[in-house]
Length: 173
Ligand code: ZN
Image (cartoon, rainbow, N blue to C red; front, side, top):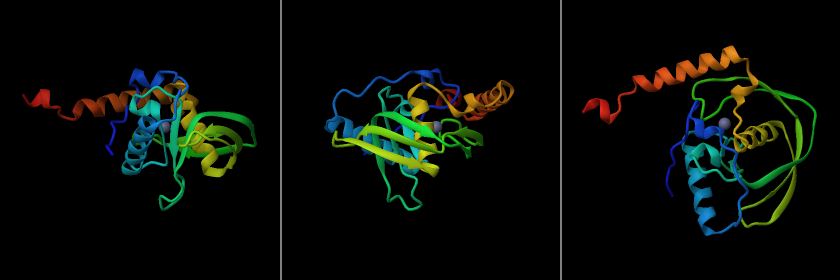
């Protein structure tokens, strides 16, 4: 297994719309394992393939407190959504920033699991919020898109500045 690099806002690659996964094979399962390792190490409760610069419709999540609920969603589709949940969200691609986002409180999702089997599952609470957040990534959408333009600009400026102050090997030479 290997830890993958997570893209950070405002990296334009985060705006890529992912294409459907064609085959659930060992190669994909290796990517899934790497995504879990990356997500748990971060630490985070969800990670979309988009965030590790793989533009296929795949996400991993685990909202359990003790890493006992790993979920893999391949080619997920929301069949039904209702209710309202307002949650303070963060994102591994927008480090250090949290804000409230309103989403559906309950969703019914159809997806392929890591064996390529079709699953239909009802989700609510944190899992429903997490899956909607990760599915947004697959559309090239970020949680900061739900905030005001002024807030988004402030976050963008801060993240770009933070990155500049980190010394890179090039600067050392
Ligand atoms: Zn995210």
